Structures are given as C-alpha cells and as structure tokens.
Amino acid sequence: MRVCHLYFILSQAVLAAAGENRVEPISPEERPFVRAWNVADFDDVISVGLEGHRDYEKGRRLFAVASCLKCHQFHREGSAIGPDLSGVGDKFSPRDLLESILNPGKEIPETHGQTIFEMKDGSVLTGRIVNDAGVTIRVITDMMHPDEVTSLARGQIVIRKESPLSPMPTGLLNTLGKDDVLDLLAYLLSDGNRKDPLFAR
Ligand code: HEC
Image (cartoon, rainbow, N blue to C red; front, side):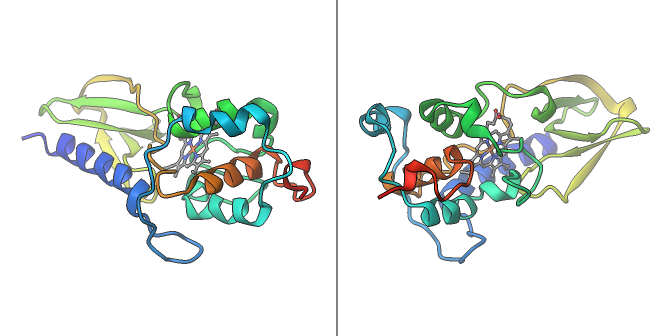
C-alpha cells in the first residue's frame, strides 16, 4: 500500500506531537500541554503594547525550548531550515508575528516550501527538495530530522506539485503559558536586544 504516504502521515503526526511532547534542547524537562493558543487570546495585551513588561532571558531561553532554533537562525545561532529570523521585528507587527507562528504556511516563501511527489507505485511523499540535479531527487521529509534524506528516482515520479503545507509544525506554542509566548515574541521583536524598551521594568 502507500507506505510513503503512511510515512508522511506519521511524520506529520510526529511533527504535530513535537509541539506537545518535544525534548527541549536547553534542559530536557517535558512540558505539559497548556492551551491551543490563537491570536485572539493575546489581543488584550497586544492592543496596549508589550513594552516594559517582558523578560529578555526567558524569551531567549524559550526560543530554544520551543524548538525554534532547530530550524531558524537568529543572529548566527541555530539551523537554516526555515528563514533567518534576524530583523523579523522590522518585517512583522507583534500581531502578524504571532499569527505566523501560530498558523505557519499562510505565506510560504518559495525558498522554504515543500513539494508533493506522486510515484508510479501509487505512493505519495512530501518534502523539501535539497538536490534536484541528479538522476535521483533528494528530499527531506521531516524537517525535525533534516539529516534523513530520501532519494526518489526521477523516472518513477508521475506528478510533482507544490505543497500548501508549511514545513513548520503547528502547535509549537501549546506548551507555553501566556507570559511565555509574550516573552518569546518580545525576544524576536527586539531583535535579541536586551536593552530594548520591551524589557524596561
Ligand atoms: C521544523 C522546522 C521549524 C521549526 C521547529 C520552527 N519553524 Fe518557523 N518556519 C519554518 C519554515 C520552513 C518556515 C518557512 C515556511 C513558512 O513560512 O511557513 C518558517 C517560518 C517562520 C516564520 C515566518 C518567517 C518569515 O520571514 O516569513 C516565523 C516568524 C517563524 N517561522 C517563527 C518560528 C518560531 C518562533 C519557532 C519556535 C516556536 C519556529 N518558527 C519553529 C520551520 C520551522
């Protein structure tokens, strides 16, 4: 049957579960589920502004704890699977930044999207192309494990199309409290500057 398809569903499930159960890179404590946050939960704070109430150290730590560093660079730390988030505060308002973390994939940059492959044997596989030049196309199917690369024989591919799904998992903030989410946002919005007014007490 569609082993690859099954594998894809499983890997998506793992990605989704990673939001609830991940092993955090800084200290490996397991974090309990808090809430499936949505943007409206933060309207009260965002509408008055985050200035002066946020905790720089906590935000910085949470950027690693919530797995962001696994895929994003921020001032030369982290991996380059997703876009570099340095300067993200100039690009996004606090609300839009939160939205892009809670609902990844609203606008997927062409350089960071995934491709769906339907194979002659009926299997379907989704992933990010890392090499499209050879006899085989090399694809990463699970962004949490970018070392695992799958090779697809070019001649076996029937359909190849852009995936509407982001490689970024959803639910990454579901194990954080409301203040945690706001500290993480402030850390990014300040561009990693601990002297930013966001952190003035
Ligand atoms: C498994 C890899 C992965 C993880 C983990 C991950 N991201 Fe992403 N992220 C991506 C990819 C790939 C994109 C680009 C596709 C998209 O925008 O949906 C992205 C896009 C974004 C964007 C939009 C950037 C832009 O310039 O448009 C923001 C903001 C972001 N991520 C923040 C975060 C934060 C904060 C965390 C941690 C809570 C996080 N990401 C965790 C892979 C990841």
